[in-house]
Length: 403
Image (cartoon, rainbow, N blue to C red; front, side, top):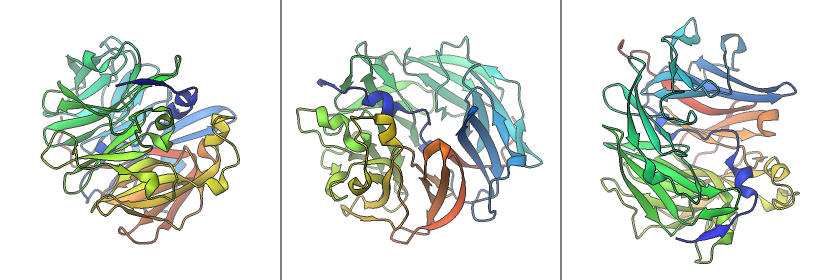
């Protein structure tokens, strides 16, 4: 694997909004959804969480039932149960639904002395009511019990740490007894990155690191795993293809790899280069729904007024993105009939089997619309609008047994 100059783009693409968690989805049938909403105004950033009926049964998010999260926190949903993390105090609390509001249902569990140096954006559910946090900077994994709200043990993730880079693990997906978590190896100070894709395969029973998968056919500076309904895993890599521009081995921009159902290695016969299907446009926000269909936000060059290299932040806030539907099996794509959105803020979520596309007009400072497709091939319809962004939307299971 080679290392290549990347410039300041890594700082811009790292972002402050955590990506959706592909592992948060549950089978259809939940009647309560949890939302995390982030709004930025003159007085700074506000993070709130809501519990609502499924989308379509209400017209707006009810701020009177919102819970503000201190410390620029994070909503975690594990097996249908909601937890709230406070990044500043490095503590997590379990919640329950009371009068339509998510309220504390446990003492605060502190991770300040657990071996973690920060509270990660994702946590993976393990067996027997346990969960796993991974600190990709220090190479420490911490197993905690979400029923008793106690720390249990640590796991060795030192193989994730490369002395030449900072490892970033932002999300994970579970399939059977395995958890797959992409690793982005970058150094924003020396402006280098690890060419290729790295994925940690983790034992979903114990939380132990089993192996690190590697593939040189795509660039993994920004990658997300999603599971299709047939248990095929798809990895969408290198948002907008910036890192690939620095490679010397012909690694493609924004490309897709897969792991077939039952396998634990990348399929050597499959690699899909997205710009070839998107009229040459680069893509990001890769999200798999079902039946082999994925959805990506692609840059519309006709709407671009600021070059990335001139001003990365202004570039990312341009309203110059379009949603596309991609057939991962048939290798075709179509642009969806929706208004354009800001380039680096659009995300998608799969909730109770439903595909929700976020279409932000001005990132955290503006209004976001949620659009929904009834099925692959259908036309999207608008469902809801609100200020800010919602990086987490996940169903809750209210019949969770008492710990």
